[in-house]
Image: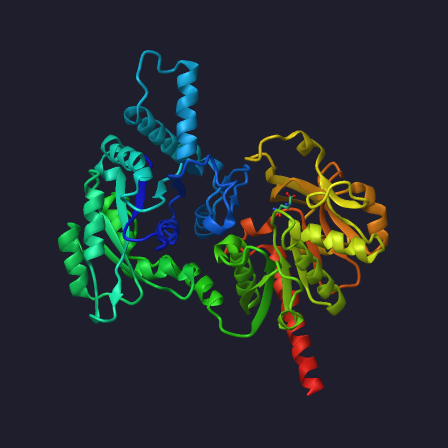
Length: 542
Ligand code: GLN
């Protein structure tokens, strides 16, 4: 029988509910349980595909092509699983499904209401996801904070779930913030008390309170929280700000979270034996302080780091695997000209995906800089497009561009896919999810992957225009990965460059701290070599 762990949040948003949930999952997974996860987003959008990355951060793409909330990325990385798209439930999906049923006549005679129709639909969606992979435990994280109007039907449905599944099978975790007031010189538990009260008013009594705080809170504080929030003392867990998010499972394990959950849900785990050794090693490799390599991510969504979160994490995983610390510098591509001094400090350049013309010229400049200065460069999706455009321009096609940015182009080296030309709706209509890619012998890509056929996730409308294959290959471009029918170009490289690779897909979604993505490992290795060359040059010039 599957066990449900529901995670709600209170006091403020962005307190790390996703990381807290993923860390609980990691602890249970280390005990050999099969752990899955669901993220509920109470907004009305059907999926996160059309949301602005400035507001909601990156759109994470699942293997089956769903555009989802970035928390699913945390879950995949912490739990080392591939989650299906139905793991992201939104108000939009719930209502659409209920209204479709109503139109079909499934509720004939009934007045369709939030209770029971919407709440039943929510429970059905949660149970369906839990069943799909036969999970032992499923984490259900409710986005937003308790008290939001949009969350109410979900809280009600989750309350009903506890009654229906039974007390031993559903556990509620409430994550709150315990602020430290400098002026008073103490921590304040009142916001935690209030948000727990708010949660209680929905009929849900939390089983565990996770208190996020800058520094550790003491035993007295914990006793106070236990008393006022009506949970056992050992169910008050304190997680302080960690130097890496991957350390949070270790911090929570010290607080004996696994033991409490095992008792409460009757999981019968062997909690006497320490299970997180492997994870501890990973954290150690990610906390290494030197040597350092500096990677510039040249993009336009740089005000919110979460917009590139999977890329940042994949770079860090690549660093861990190479025994180096990766420092990520976000470089704004939406400027009149890129500051060459900023680029001069970089050991590697990564050009991420993106949409629209704004900021593209800066990306093209970065490609040019990397070619001229032999700096390792990695292009992902729009990053690969930028590489192809710039190489085309350098080989004489002066006005080469992507038809995403201008119409009636003389040299549309990147063009819209045929099937995309018929598409009318913007939502969920790109080439999405996992596709096979065949690698070409004697290429950098082949030597990195050491496989003939790979699977990677996509999210795009435009692609390499085959009309320009011959000309660009003559100009030094190497086509090293294709769709199995040979029609779509999936990977490009450049001859006589230390490390130059662009891919149409998004490898960052498949990187794990426990299993860094080979392209990122190879890129960081090349960047480290470049940093050594750079240091030597500086020494020589002094
Ligand atoms: N905007 C480009 C396209 O639609 C690239 C997309 C991306 O970088 N994910 O093809």
